[in-house]
Image (cartoon, rainbow, N blue to C red):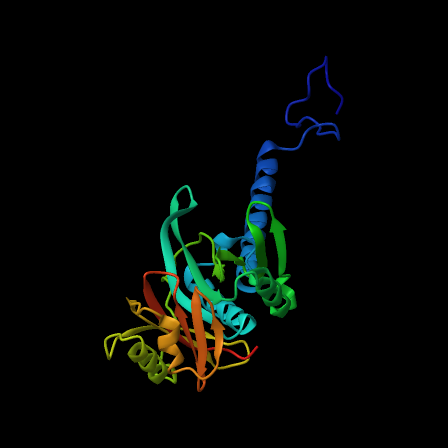
Length: 288
């Protein structure tokens, strides 16, 4: 019905032409539904990623989870370094910050390798060549640090190596700062092996106390088995440690002012002569 004098007739609603805006209540309901749907989709993608995707930052993997990878990396370093490689005890350094609101810790495991003076770089290059190709290992020489080995063992575990002293190369694998989780548990040492008799014989030759307790450190080998190092407490050095040890060594693998090493059966005996006292380590390593 046409308007009368510009006024709509009673009982008739005004028309809603195509130019009139939609109801604001309907718009808000649509926005709410879209937001809920997006939140559900994002949660589903996050759940799927957590379950199936590898971690993309170090903070997504705890020390507990990274520990076994570090252990395997150290075993690979022992296999690559050869007979004079000595496992050192694991170190967990707490107190770093994963985020401004979360504490973390760093796990570091190492291998000391004794060589003749001047052969340190050659050893680093040989180790780099023997490590898995996926680690992209290489040795770079700088004026400040000399030759340095760098490699990536995966999952944010860094492998490095350098000259710690004349005739001594130190290789390490570390996690960087990350959440602690349940902490790091070192691999089980297991029963005494071939190193016990060899260590006792070396200590006797040096005039050390009989029955000295040894610290045993182990790591899994890449091809199976376990690398073991039994390290005795330092003993006073006799006038000529090398001459003393020659009485129990057939043919030395290494004879320098810093170290004396030889085989005894399946074990390799390494005596660190660099200090005022002698530290003897006996190793059953990994096949190269």
